[in-house]
Image 1 (tube, rainbow, N blue to C red):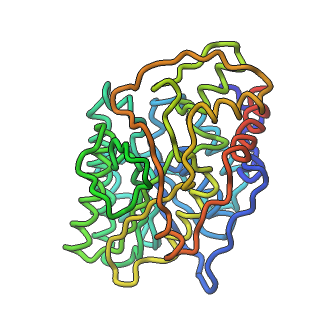
Image 2 (cartoon, rainbow, N blue to C red):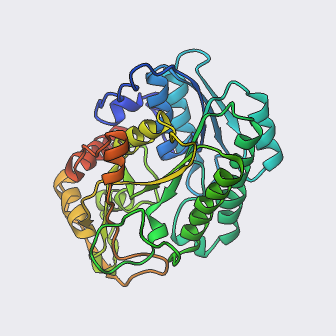
Amino acid sequence: MERADAHLPFRAATGGLPPRRPARGLIMGRILVTGAAGFIGAHLCQALLARGDEVIGIDNFNPYYDPALKEARVMALTGNARPGAFRMHRIDLADTEALLALMAAHPEIDRVAHLGAQAGVRWSLQAPFAYTAANVTGHLGILEGVRRSEGRIGHTVYASTSSVYGSRTDGGSFQETDRVDHPASLYAATKRAGELMSSVYTDLYHLPLTGLRFFTVYGPWGRPDMAYWLFTEAMLKGRPIELFNEGRMRRDFTFVSDIVAGVIAALDQPPADGGHRLYNIGNSNPEELLDMVGLLEELLGVQAHRVLKPMQPGDVPATFADVSAMKRDFGWEPTTDLRTGLSHFVAWWRNHFG
């Protein structure tokens, strides 16, 4: 994968959006970020480094999608980080011995942002054990590493997913108090398992933990398996695009810089009671897939050749985040509408692929 400008700063890739300022009086720390070469993880690392934190990254650079993109993200980070502020370790989260050894070897870590996981709803139908390895064994390894730090790690924020809510047809927003005992995919089940294990570890060991249920994250440096990337590539090459559920699926598309701002806001403010919290983090404005295609047509200047397909196994018809708890507890709210976010992605795409 050609990357002539791999050192393009992440701020430039997201439209020059400045990182949020840290909370007043906050002492910069040393933060472990898992999935640091991933889409959201790399953006988070950039934002943490920009405000003065030191970051220890973990990623296994697996080939779920082209590892060259992950390498390019890390090159962009290392090319713009202060000397010594960013260190990357190539470790598989499922390698519990190596993970625990790394965490023990870095007693300076004071917080953890655990974003590493095996992503993708549909691929969980073909490779189920990859999901239990990364999302169950890997999550448990992080919890054990935090427990063994004996209080040195003051807060852990981890990524969950809107997929835990399963198939909803009532049209209402998803709230953290809703029942989540009927996931529609193995991917969702493994992420729900992470939430349950976190609750147990908080009850047993009083670990301060915060889980964030991400809603359809998109933006520059994104994942090639996501619809907006697939559509952009196909449209510019004159290929048809496949619209599942005939394009009538509604998604709460959330721009990556908004997600990162929410992760940092949560990371900086551990639960006062040392407990376990769960929050939705999304745009709180679901839009039809067909509407996203229409915006891409405008931004790319090409017409999409649509192929309407039925709903796929594991997919859900709609997602819709109620983010009132994030607003209440962290003063966070999304700031990027879909048109603006897609324009940043398209600009990044043209810069990389012409």
